[in-house]
Image 1 (cartoon, rainbow, N blue to C red):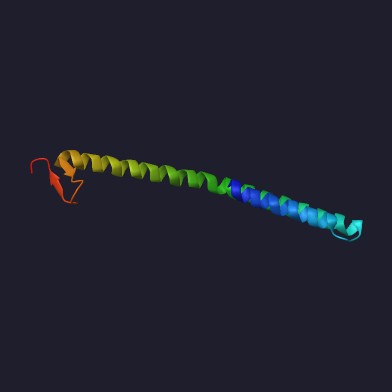
Image 2 (tube, rainbow, N blue to C red):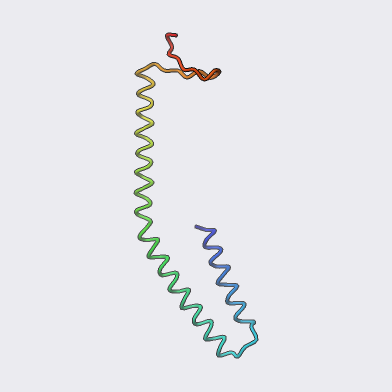
Length: 99
């Protein structure tokens, strides 16, 4: 998110500087700056609403994924314990402790 924020700030600052140093009448420059600020304000408002909409859903998705990972991890551990399973580190074959 910080990277995108940096890009956005760079675009805004670059545009403001470009408008400010462009050879044109002051009134036209002020009108362009006002339009830029209004567009920026609307964009920020939309981005904020979008983030407020997405954030809780993303948080729920992450929590659900984390819960699923923990469930599978527990199932794998229980399966290993119940089968007394040991993976071989050399030849890729798997065996139980009794072999």
